[in-house]
Image (cartoon, rainbow, N blue to C red; front, side, top):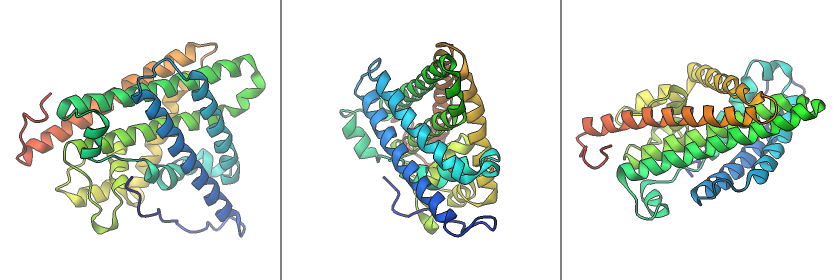
Length: 288
């Protein structure tokens, strides 16, 4: 995991009482740890070829995250949640830095010697299956909520949980694709590697490691924070498809996530292949 540096805090806001900011920070840190654990368990399940198994466990994990997100959102206050600030700060500061990114050699070892486009296909397939499973688990929770209307009060937190998990899976995919295509984001100038991969996810593109100034613009600053907030809110809006009654939401959530993650992977892979050729790499090594 490339998270040796901790995210910086912007300091307490003027409208908060002493101690409130520290409490919110602690809750967000706990969320980051929880999402990291869920991500590792989910990907281990998918990479272990356990498709179709563990549906009840997925829903249990999601319920746990929903509860934690609900508590954190209440602490953040209605204004921060409604503006998307809470969602984006939680993801950028506590979740994205904890997403484990394997290097090229580790990826090859974990996939039985696969390399090149075959390994890229495997990474894409794993991510697609993971986000599909998250969408279906979220839809299944919605089916329960339609049967028990009081549980609809948890719907905003459930949507946030699904949004953060899908985003974490996709950031991991993008980071590992960069490692595979020998285009890892460097930490020049104190820039965390995962921050660069987060910027690549926000803008749905591959980062050119020969242009560190471009990576910096993608990953930090006010414009980057606004772009991240907008991207997460669009993803949250997309996840509204899982709110259908019975199991229609589960089916819709799975399909939407599968298509979106596949399209993201294809676009980033095309960018990275083109950059590899520009840098003088052998196009035959990673030829589709």
